[in-house]
Image 1 (cartoon, one colour):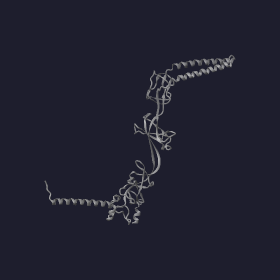
Image 2: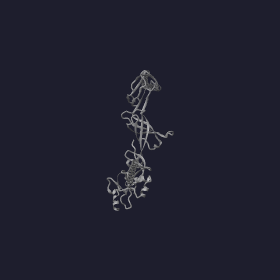
Image 3: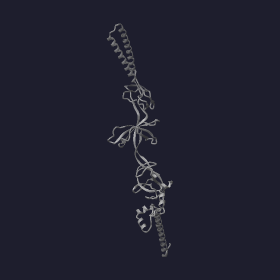
Image 4: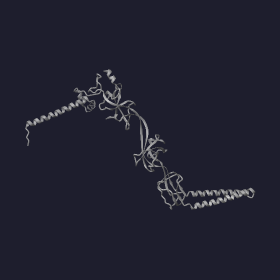
Length: 403
């Protein structure tokens, strides 16, 4: 066990007090040096209530404002070296996005024209057909018999009409007989046309060109005029239906460009344009139904797919500044503008952010310069030296002449 004498305890206490005093002195000295030589310290010291006492004891805070003798700023700062960029003028891009569903440009369900038994199905799912191609065929035995009977009746009527025509030349046939023979001939012609039409309806053909969907019947089945044989989709182009908020009414019209992204493949982009608009806003959802037509050159899209649709609208014109120029304080966003060779704080309201520019609402003109680098020590009115700029653009000639 170690026993300390009273003298040793007192000695250790004195040493500790000296060390604490030295640390406090160093801290005070560092604080004074920060206040004297760093202009950005003044606002901090003012907020915590230390600036006033320091001034009372004769310690001057660093500032970028010139002294009464028009010399360089106190604290040994001189002109602050910064990098600046010009203000641009840009249009706000108002963007609308929506989720829509795709459907084929044309889609037709194939059904028979009448009832009967299927004797042939000529297509398979996935086949490509053109308009007029035979898809399936119904039993047509009775229709063929009717056509043959009509052909015989027509031949007999033609022979009768020709005989009466010869008799009329010799005066052996009356005008009434000749008229009756002509009517019977025309009737026979119509009956043949009807028989040929009925026979043609037994062949089920494609009304449009496109791709064949699932074939839902087999040869030998009995079908009616409501039986769906298959469906043909013309998907060279797809129609995407979606809804936009009513605030876009008047901004969107047919021909407006759109970009569509399948939700199953969001990295794939398809270009298109608005093809149709509804003539009224839905009062329940306050939305306008829109239809866009997108290209499907590789036949990778299918009807029924979900799409994310994006439309861009040009808005109002606003000043644009580089993202690095935007600074923040408790009062909001601001930038440092270069005016007459000095820093001027300009409050801004951010309207839209882009990757290379921020559109703002502010008292800025196109071509005016704003500081992008070197903003840490700036205060309103601070003299600036823009790196790479000519002296006359920095206000240094005026300072030299006044001195």
